[in-house]
Length: 439
Image (cartoon, rainbow, N blue to C red; front, top):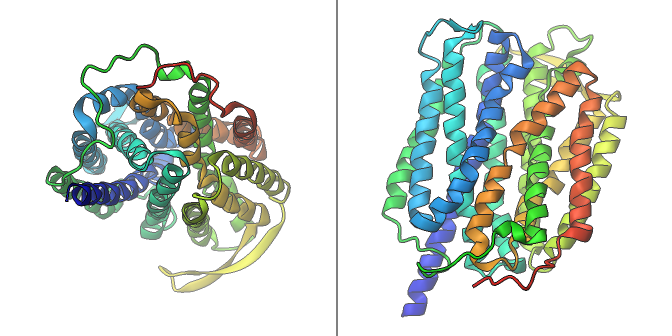
């Protein structure tokens, strides 16, 4: 009877984590497409991308405290706090479309309200990821099975990440200086309602900590005392630059200009096509995670990361090389009832294909880095969340290089990140500190 109750509780916890994975995926990039609206209002690509930056910056400030919250409050209470914070973040972003605060430093005051909302949303994502990953990895004992379960949950994350990247272009169409942030109010309102409902539902679910640790446990060292954990934390920072940078690049103005170049009336079609390419990245991430979940029990995390990073690097190089080669594709502009052609770069398809490879990297790096750290798992999870800020910093650097040096030069950023991850899988993922007490 006790065994059946334990299995039932584990199943409820797993299903709940999968649902939270989906919610986290939707909110992760919700600030990025909305930032396109502010980009035109402010007249700066870099400032327009700061919403995405603020979303990830929250991880830098909340990552390590999240680990301590998880240790003290437990998984269920932290999940409740995460959902409530998510609702607050979305509502603040929604508010920015309805207030008028004049100008501050030459930019609309309501833009700062939007940035605050993006930061609060990022705090929610940090808390959610901090709960989900160690729960799914630990509840089945880590190893190949832990990686496999995280990949299965990550499939939900990928699906809703892509949905969030496509939803604004689909609802608004081509973003111009006249586009109002309030036009996405319906999307934000629904998202806030879902997070509010999740807060209430989780409060009534029987979710226990995957491992019951003594309240008197002593932490003699730090998770960073493990070399493989320290280098894995660096790896997560760099991986996030790839995961966020590639789909953002497929929606860049440079890609849109290439697709619309020399074709009259192709602006709207190019905008939607660019959003579709970003959506395709996450669809392939969904496919990759499903495949990883199916075969993760037979393939070691180290081998999976080695192949994924190597193939991604090859696709990136080929994509940059073929960015000037185009394929003409007809595209219907539903709002105008017309069909125009767009010139889609072949290189962009290579970037899209990278989604299959990057799909498995998050869970694999987490698995490799936390394997054998025992009581330091929650602390390591907090450190991982801190480094998710790479998803805001590195794409911003990539975008700046692309705008001020050359568009293709910006791809040196994800290229360097992938090279490091290849080396991590090849050399630095082994635990060389087995002498540290972990229980």
